[in-house]
Image (cartoon, rainbow, N blue to C red):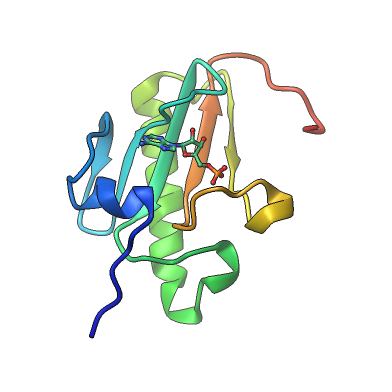
Length: 117
Ligand code: AMP
């Protein structure tokens, strides 16, 4: 029996709740963050339910590589590639993860401080 992905991103993947999608292919989708931390804030998520970065298996390496390629495509599409942007993956509680479906944050459209708080 396959597990139901009851996270909010599982619901977005199934179309049960709306999202402002900017990318869609057979392996992943990307949509705008509902509570943006920067003028451009997009989340890239795999269709496969991988809860955290710690759960990426060896078989998932090509999927993750594909998602990083998609990040570059979206950055170009959004017009932030040349100025620059940040890619963030929060992992578990201390990393600030709140949704347990792996996601990559693309943040851009303003200067971003480093190190983060
Ligand atoms: P994290 O804290 O890394 O788990 O990031 C989860 C992100 O999902 C946060 O930036 C939220 O603002 C975002 N988020 C939560 N619900 C939604 C939603 N329905 N649509 C788009 N983004 C969402």
